Image 1 (spheres, helix red, strand yellow):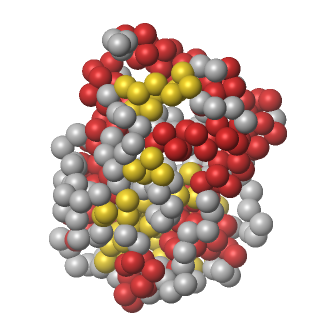
Image 2 (tube, rainbow, N blue to C red):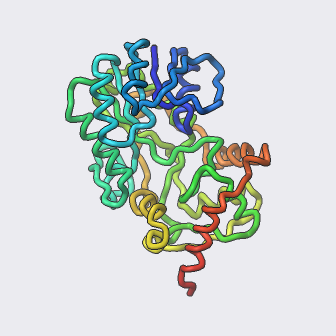
Image 3 (tube, rainbow, N blue to C red):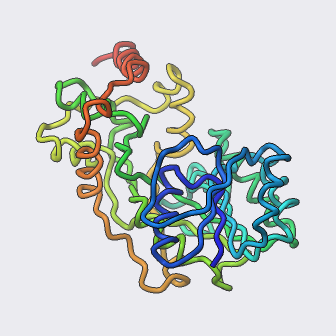
Length: 326
């Protein structure tokens, strides 16, 4: 099939690109061309900004597409533009939403696609909900909505506050405290990007996927304390955990607080029956311990990747310093 990825070189989209190529698809990327990421097979690169109407017109030359997937659509205005532009240029438009759209707090820790969409804590999730509503209220563009939860790859060390820096490993190695929000016992799911990609590409061209929505996550469940302890086990040192309520973190760092209260502060476990029914045989394969081992090895392969983000360090230290100790 002829596949257009808007983006294509990010954490999730790069894995989806590799999987789509592996399955024999013809893959086009539309992005600003700032990444030097390479793939095992050739792709067609079109450079431009999807939010620039004149750049967007470059895509007409290669249309129509069997599948268009936009990995960088975040606002209602962006989804409106996509609906107008792609309505006669693709058989399947895939919107990458987010599992943060599900009701917070949830009625049940086990989430299915029937869960209501409502997140009063985080604008990011609210915008994704608005985008979904615009898609589902029109009938001119065949769509599929996909909702990833916390999805990481080898270039990420996934923790509650930041994923793209070496800071958590640095803090564990140095014996510095690691913030585990709340009591550390809320349940969480980490999904490797290669597992996500196999299910995602499996939706291409499926009639059952049209005008439908799916979340794609691992079935492996850990508490947040366990997540940090697994990282520590890979590092070879027990993490020094400090439990701080999400509300307190929000009072000091509202940006981090929104992501906690609107997502990670509550137990979130996903029933993947629906995606498995449409992509038979799919199952997440990469354990968190194996995935994080790969991530840490990638960072430590080159010293320049192990740089410490001092802004993050300062924020963590400020929260810990201001938290009343018993």
